[in-house]
Length: 455
Image (cartoon, rainbow, N blue to C red; front, side, top):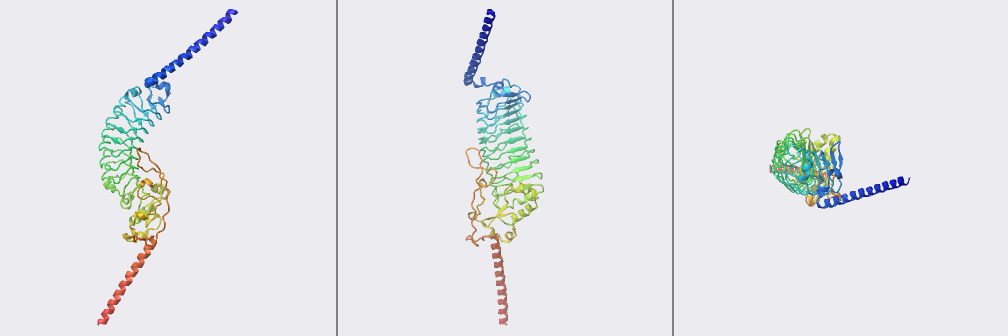
């Protein structure tokens, strides 16, 4: 009996010792791994250990883990999806990506990546989707995407700090269908940047610093369906910009500095264009817009432009009234469609007949007497849920406050010689006409009396 008790005690002591030894061993290993991680980060950061791996979907989820580098592929070698967004990664190398040679989707968005070296993706031959949104990337040199160029379908580079692109940055991406450069700091586009992107369907260039475009910059994009050029600084559109784009159905030119637009034929617009957005530009006259309104099946958004109340705007009014009521909000985009008349904004549905009859000298306006309910000279101050561009160091957009004071009603005849309202101008014109007619009749009567007196 005594021997049995001692045996049991000895067994418990041995188990406790082994447990302590195991605990110490694990702690030592963890400490060693931490030390090794400080010296060689990639040696300890293994995907299988630190990420959540889904065997069924072959998906490695490594987001929101505070990583400063991509973990090596141990444990995730078969991953088709590597999701490593929302970390602090600043460097991506071809060596570390070589272990993930099977990935189809790579999400590196919302990190601190500043540079992508040419050949970084040369071992990822099956990759189709690359997400690099919301990083600190400043430029992309020639050959950046060598490796997956025969498979890459979608490339997202929005919300970075891109200032310059090279002509061969996108070389060989013949299968690319979606390309996003929105919200960067691009001032110009190399002439051959989009050359041979024959599969491209969706191109997003909104929220940059573009002031000019070469007329052949989009030539060859025969499958392009939609292009976004909103929130830039374009003051004109070159002739033939959209020539040859036979699949183009949507063009967004809102929040630029346009005062006129070439006719659809001159611009190269094809018959299948369905949507044109000219919201928030600097159009004074609607004359250059009328040819687009006359196209069947084309919806044009034209609000928040400083239109003048003239006969061209009356033609625009007639077109607007022909739009089905349920679709009118698409034309106005939630903002009232108005024209300027002597310092006031006149709604599109008001009677514009008197304004159209009055000579042009009465439709000349001074910006110093404009009704200041909306900014009429800069799209950056238009009150809307959209986001116009502002000058910043990064590509950040903001929403204007929209707080404006109502303008006071001017005197019946302004000091500049224009009338305070179209009613008073119309009455003045009628009275002037009557006076002229009476004077003419008086002259005739005097002439006849003079003839009689001579006889």
